[in-house]
Amino acid sequence: MNSRGQAGAVFRFLVEVIMGALILAIILGAVNYFSQARIDVSERRLSNAFENAFEKVIGNPDPTTQSVVLEKDLLMQPIIYGTKQFSSGYDIEDVCIDFISSSNKVFQVGQGNKTIEIKQSIQTNVFMQCFAASAVPISSPSVSDPTNCPIYCIISFGKPLPLPA
Image (cartoon, rainbow, N blue to C red):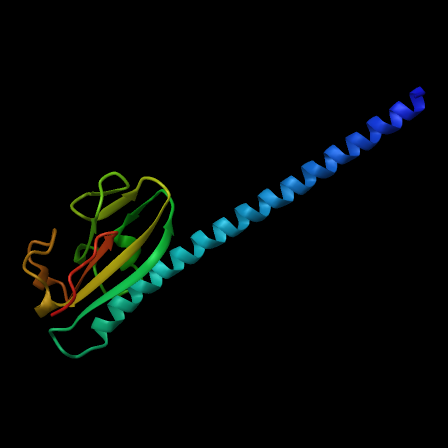
């Protein structure tokens, strides 16, 4: 084979490598995009679940109202949530919300049950339970007198909550 033929083969090989790299970049970009979209959907579902649990209690005149909302299979990324993130925009103080969890390996509750750190990516169920003031359980995790809260909510990552009586 002459040098011109070898140069053509090298050129074709170079074009194929570049095309392969471009295709790989497109595939990786699409995977990353859809993965992030799934995380965004989980974040919205988490926020909507709290809103549903809260609204079921606030909109009910019965002073013994309780609500339990379950969001299944949320894709959670490493993050730290605080109760202020959930209380803002609602007529509830952050002291009237507590976090609990099922595991100290993946979830770490801190600051008197007012923060939760998700240490690694995980797909989990999140349970939310809100109570009207007179229905708040005496054994609430951190509120010294939960009856001072017109509504008290517990957000549990991976740990099922008891159903209302």
